[in-house]
Length: 248
Image (cartoon, rainbow, N blue to C red; front, side, top):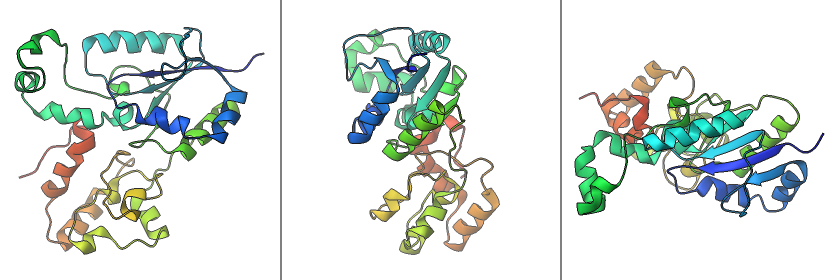
């Protein structure tokens, strides 16, 4: 039996998650020893439709994207959504709350009618997804762990606790104490709270934890004189497809 055949695909995205795979550096060589890459536009010219694992980056923003994604899904035994755009819709979903015709004119001017588009959505809104690697971009460590688990025949694991846990482990000062809002209390961990550690806030790029403790989050916000709407507006940066609405 030969090496598992894998392929990389991208839709609407910056392709930063694939660059993180490149950034594995020496570990990438170990990955390549264990698999056969048969499709990766950023790294090779050739392509084969015979693959076992498909890593797919980007959100779906056109009807024609759906056709292509369904074809990828048909060939893949395992389909992995790679990064925030693929897992929760990502930055591209900002347009979902805008007038589509107005957005088209603003971006493309008089040529707007020549460009096909519709509200952006994650892969799972179109096809079944076997596993998601979260983040904007993904972390190299998590990608390597997922590949290893798949090669061992195991289901990869993804943290299902909030970023606040990792913030405490990093001994960060809570950004609420600095008068800022933060999505960390309800956002899935796995990034080692990198944004907060570097002086920013959690932007929610890894999506919501399963069954987020909404009551606790409301209590935290109230303690700092904030309302739910204050934080839901921030979630729009990455998660407009999730159905979150402002509460005025």
